[in-house]
Length: 477
Ligand code: SF4
Image (cartoon, rainbow, N blue to C red; front, top):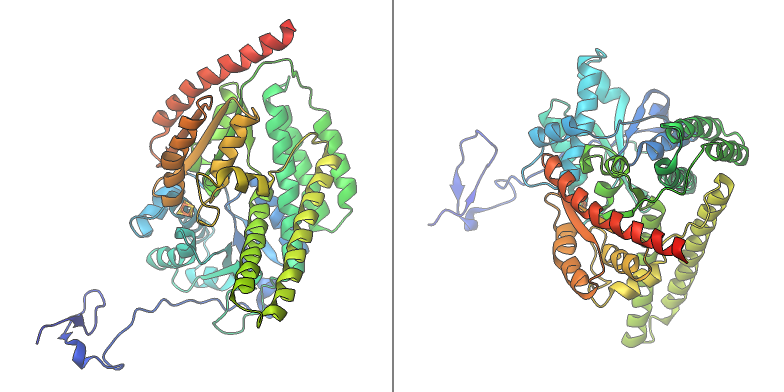
């Protein structure tokens, strides 16, 4: 009889082959991933929630938000090259770069607690856990949590808890698991912190390139962050704090007569958002080279998720209409859900513009998700999910048609299928159809900084010339 399957395939163990006919429940050993996610309400006061992965401003305001909700919380530092190396050492082969950076960053932090703060592994496992967002895919983001567990196990932290939440549901299973309440309060606090950080970052990108005194913008942003951390963490008046921040930021002296090319940074969510080695500190590099950056706010991502839900509900209603009238009572639910999504979209936009107006960010426009979907649809199906979906395509077309930037840079992480397919594939068609586009896609492998910088410099040369031409034309009128 031909051997087909192993009876026991654990590494290092002697394996016996059995035929498919001989397989029974007792001799098949299925792969099992231990998933310790027990975190009870009683443990809250003695457990520190670790998290991170956005910009420093986002992570630190979120830390204050978590404290306001009654948790002990700590934002991890921005991921650097050491994090990438550590992620590669303990992670599986063939992961995308953001996986290595984020996983390695957590492992490094825990190693620091063990090696430099003299905490035992048992103490770390008992008094710390990591909280992260998760999805079911379709890209590797769906595997992040498993990847965290694998790396932690191999690095000697077996049993360390990773709590994930998705769309309002905390991970289930394990023992008593009511420590992290992913309720409306949790999400509204998270969104509040994210939006405020988005607006502060946007102001920073607007004024830093034109500041008269070097470092004045960063100092004003740091002071604003401190004010807001106190206001959020201690539940003091947010409006008063935002108004104080406005004064600090308005005091930065600027010279907007300087001619600078505007660079739109798009691409994979994590790679374009991080301010660390994950994108070779691209934003700071562009500013050093004399450009003004526009980085995508996380609010746009939230609007995209709401748009996805709205479009799903629309399709469901359409299908039900075609199928039969028996399910018509369920349509009422879909109509109500659509209404709620529309309200949430309006609320999110309203809150963003309210914060922008209090902080003094003028003439800033969030992406119109319906428009982005419409203009990108001929080139990239709106139904295809993964990575940024059709957003990246739509943003490039918009940038050219509406003359939003002199250069568009797409950041695609090494090993990312969705981002590479768009940046190298679909965007080539867009640049052929829109020859005026000054577009480059850069790949972040973690070790190709010189190559990336020199490509960016070449594209910036064209952008600078275009910006100068436009300025000369304007002055001659
Ligand atoms: S979009 Fe790409 S880089 Fe981002 S998690 Fe998915 S596979 Fe990884």
